[in-house]
Amino acid sequence: MTLFAGMPGSSGSIEVVCGPMFSGKTEELIRRVKRAQIARQKVQIFKPAIDNRYHETEVVSHSSLSIEATPVNTSVEILQKVYDSTRVVAIDEVQFFDENISVVVEKLARRGIRVIMAGLDQDFMGKPFGPMANLLAIADSVLKIQAICTVCGAPASKTFRKNPKQQEQVLVGETDLYEARCRAHADFFGEDQDQLAFFVNLNESRSKTQNL
Image 1: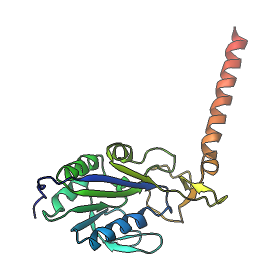
Image 2: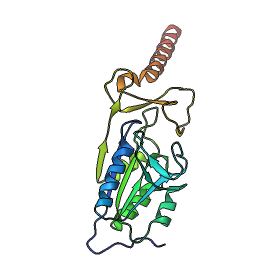
Image 3: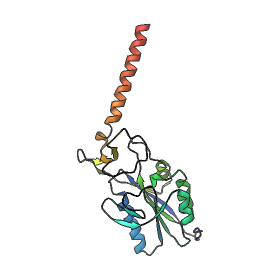
Image 4: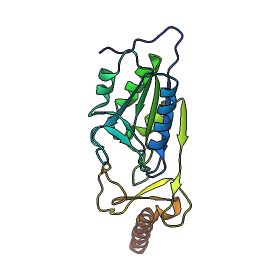
C-alpha cells in the first residue's frame, strides 16, 4: 500500500460539510461519495474509531443511509491507508480527530486528491469543536447546514447537551444526550452565567464605593 503521489495537472481540493447534530451532514457526505462512485472514481471513506454509535465499520446517517468505511484512531492512519489509485477521500465526524488532521488533508489535496469531510463545527458550548476551526480556514469550499430547533421549529445551528453537568467536549451520543437548537434556545445557560458575572461585578463595585 502506497500513498498516491499525484498526477501532472491534477488538482486536489478540500471540502467541509458542517453544522449541528441532526442537520444531515453525513447524508450529504454519502451523497457526494456516491456521485463520485457513479463517475467511477476510486473512493476511500474513513471514520474515527470512537464513533461506533450505529456500526463499527460503516458511516451511518440519522436517516439510516450507510456506506462502508475504515475506522481509524489517529489522523496519520488515514495517510498510511490511502491507496495510490484513490482519487476521493471522505472523512466523517472529522471533529473527533486530532489537530494533525489539517496537515493530513492538505497533504492529500496537494497530491491531487479530493477530500470531503463532514463534522460538527461547534461543540455543546458553541465553541469550535477540536480541529474544525483550522479545517474551515483551509477548505476550498464549506457547506454549513442547519437542523430544526426541537423547541420552536426554527432553523437550528447549535447542538444542545441535555445534561450540562457533563462538561467534557467529546461525549459520543444521540438523541439521548443531544438536541438541535436555534440560538435563542441554546444560549440560556450562557445567559445565566453572564447575569451571574454581572451581579458579582456589580456587588464588588458597590463594596469598593462604600469603602472609599
